Length: 322
Length: 314
Image (cartoon, rainbow over all chains, first blue to last red; front, side, top):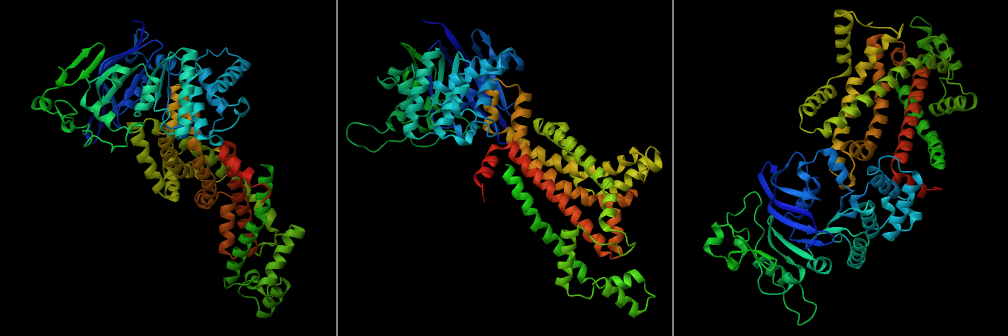
């Protein structure tokens, strides 16, 4: 067992809205080991991004509230740090790549300035201009953008290149943890593969750990060591990647996810989507959150929260395996 | 960029010609001729007709317009006032500094006050600070300037005796007129800045900035504000036009010898050459300010700069 870099324990986050309290993340626990990649899968609204932003403490201050839990990073609880201490963590220790590269960059700042800014925030002001320049050039080269274009503005780059720039910003300080929030879902398919391969290569090069958020099981299968499946703000299954994709001991939701994937080989079959919708996060079911859509739903599923059971590092939150 | 500025300066010629034409046409429609205006009601019709002929007023409209433009272009001659027979341009320009000072001072202060309070209100949305200034801004945007002016005189001059109610004798004469204009226009700028900032703060790139490790204030002042400023700058430019116009009211209330009072006096006397000259000066000023706004736009936003560059040679 190698060293644990990030340990999220019992994290709950709610949004206070006029329609009531939105329970976006509910008692989520997971850990990421040094150098490893954890995948966070789930459909839109499952709480993946809230979890990610919650780790960086970038949630809207006025509406979001941490209800419970700790986020331990390199031995210190991020939730206990001051704002100023958080500035030193963000971008330096933990970076984030956002979903939509079209809007993630400041439209009126040159690419060079946006990357250099990230370097300067984390140097004590003694860094020489030439050094900053050199680091900007180096990281641009690493993400495959000619350094000669660094004086250009975001609108002069294509979507794929913008995402490369966003990745350059995230990695320029060589963070210990990279949070990639659907880094490829806004790109077209050919770009997706390229950008993904690049992220994985850079991750290896600077030996960073990663939290990969995606709704795309293909992306997850290719990149992650472990996978956590999220549903309605809860982690309902977590296991090493190969165990998620094989075996029979699965949460019905995970099975549903797999069934709604089109297969490459074999006969073309109709996809089997999961019937129904995710529950309203302002009014979650008392028992298992998936119960209303579950084909194996029993009486106790509707009233009792199923426990998490483990078998060889494979966690499932379902009454069937309890 | 230089080509763009040059092009815009050239374009000012037809714009100003248009302004001159419209004002000239309106003034020609008024039932008054310079002869009877200058000589008064007791003059004989013969004398009036003679003077009108000398002044060229009996010529057809388009000929008069053409001659007027010719005098301006060839001799930079804007004609003489019907009222006191002095050259219009020199006289108008002698009144201009007062107006310009009031307008510039109030533009400066309303920008500083409106923009900074707008940023703070947006950052602290829903706070007491935000609510208080939003209500105040709504109030001051709605209150007419002349009422504010009179109230300020009532309070600070007549009751408290702190500031002079009229004149331009010393620098403190400018405080109340400037304040009168600042109330209205800073309220406008406050509302716009606040709305723009609220929008920009919610943009994704501000989150990227924070994720890089930017302190909140850097995110707000370096990233969000610069993006929010574009429409604000337009509004500042427009409000300068408003301030020049508003100066007429303010100068009248505070008895200041600016272009506003000067123009008003000559409008009432149907002194066409003076009105024409003043209008032309104000229009040229306004055009120049708008040009500055466009240049500022290009300096701030590279996308607009790129547009100007693409239109090269057009």
